[in-house]
Length: 265
Image (cartoon, rainbow, N blue to C red):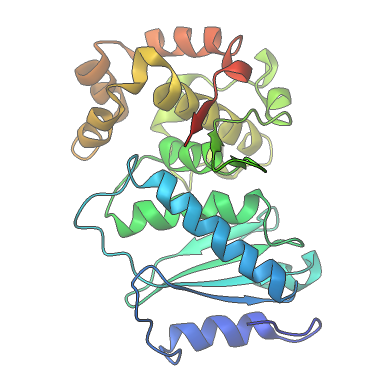
């Protein structure tokens, strides 16, 4: 649904969805998009997110996932989005509802990393996964910049995020013990002085665990272990490594992360 700029479409769209007034979807994976960026942009957004769900299925989804419909409000400008942002630095958010889930985002083109970042939260939430903050945000960042082939049906996963390298410098580095113990509401993930580093380091750690051969085979076991144990215990159980040992691997992984992507047919 295209809504003209300058309207209070976000409030209308989100309340409309929340009230359950939208027509019932025939397919549980269907989405409703409200945008000021134009119909083509909204259509491209839906296509991109459905493709992303396909990539995420073997990584996150389980057979009993509920796959509720998703209502997406895509704002065409910062001014339109800001009144609904959960915090001033936010460019997108995800909310889980009883009948449908919601994504709100600032997205001028409706195909940027913002929507793709929120989508793993949707998939994980519908799956009932209870992930620690570092993995929840790390996976969202990892899958936020899928690159589709222009001439072939291929998708590249694990593309390097150049702006993240600044926040991974030694003087910005957060000790892994502190990162993996931080909650989503902690200062690590909310303070202006650390939030960018926390997201960048979470991305790097998720990248290594999902794509590095030393860790990737056991990643599903890590997800299972994190259902009933804290991260340090899960690392010990699944990888037979302490947090300090994983951190050593992670620092070394900085040297190869730019070339360690994966191409999916």
